[in-house]
Length: 280
Image (cartoon, rainbow, N blue to C red):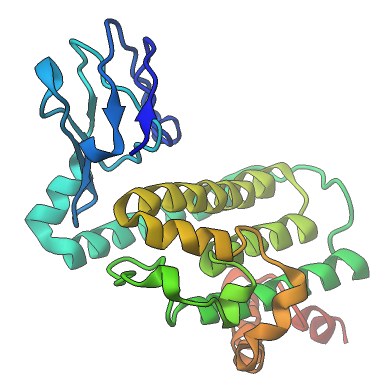
């Protein structure tokens, strides 16, 4: 049983990423992992002896924390409340719709933003080829992330500590987030402007921070199963393991061709191989 030392702050890992800062005053009891009680809806209840009994920290990862006397140890419990009201499936639908609307608004804002000088010629052979390869890799990673991914919501991870990583998980334990990151990098390569850096850079930041937050949360919710999985897998993609994607490379090619064609038809900007077809 591990014990956390005392000071005058309540420290909650990844709360900063959610924009929450909590200042504490007073004396701290000794808080151990036995006080942290995760539940299926993402809530984490903290119960300590004495006047601090029953504090609740919902939808946050408490990996290293303290609960102090007279502490308003509160993190908004909107997620847990929505899961209780709409169910896990309903919450995911609402979350997905909000995400789509938010991203669509960002794309519209991108289109209306004034064009600024580019740092280099993104249409030249080298950045265009690199970006095309990155989006092809992203397509393979994304397709491979759909099946057997323990990071997906609602997946049963019991016994994960006994699972030997194979396939895409030889590359990274966050294939979907890695795909989004590569997508963002590809767009910055071919359109190195301020508005692209903001939009694509935001996607990259959300993917990286989201992956870290996911590891932290699941380490609390699933304990040893997830911690062992983290030790056996890589956070960043390992290029040397790309061969383990196997048939997903084959599946990624037509998907990549279709997506780049849609990019041309919808955004009116050629992508991938279509830039050369447009030239000739």
